[in-house]
Length: 148
Image (cartoon, rainbow, N blue to C red):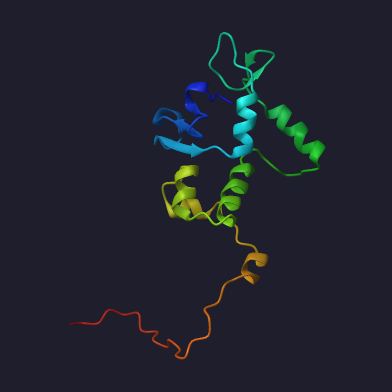
């Protein structure tokens, strides 16, 4: 809601947040999806504000009511704005992005927090990739360190 045009780099395709603007106080660059980029390019600029999201020419202060109404119209129950973050993290993973890139985009500093946002479904588990047939089978299950 508080995004400013100064933070949006349409040419490079990034939203760049300073450390003072993030929850964990770490600056980050977030790549802009091509469709979002198109939408941002079409948004009008305010005359007396640098804010991106306007309503009636004035900066949007909150959108809770609009989001709730949109969920009702879409038939979504028990869905919060924060759930979109979970969806984004999972969709980026399903698209084949590695965890480190996704963590950089989402701002997760630790794997334990990041893992809370990932939900591996049974459909994904059914699609697990198995190694090709080999002539030998690795049966070494000893994981203890050997003394030299």
